[in-house]
Length: 129
Ligand SMILES: C[S@@+](CC[C@H](N)C(=O)[O-])C[C@H]1O[C@@H](n2cnc3c(N)ncnc32)[C@H](O)[C@@H]1O
Figure: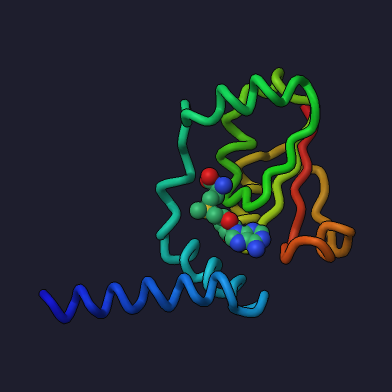
């Protein structure tokens, strides 16, 4: 029990260090592995998330940029009449593939763009209402 706790704690600290100081490819791999193993399946459906009301209020029919969009639940579940367009970006290919499937209305997968230089991302999803 004590040993398991220490091992889990060490793993968690290592993950945090990797996420903070690791190189881009390592971070991407880590998120890809976690998404593939189902660690983030709990985020695939989050209807009524407490932040949605706030986002919808302040979107003011404008554009939403979702950094770290994961498998696309936010883009999928927000009231589409509250914003003009939604762009989700994520470092994980696995998450982006799921988001594409979830959103269905994905229109573009970019290879290179200004986003790629600013943020360590692999893909951009765009969807217009
Ligand atoms: C905890 S998940 C949250 C996903 C989503 N926002 C949601 O609420 O369902 C964090 C997400 O951030 C992404 N992420 C982490 N670091 C990133 C980075 N440097 N650039 C882009 N995405 C990143 C991960 O791949 C993951 O999908």
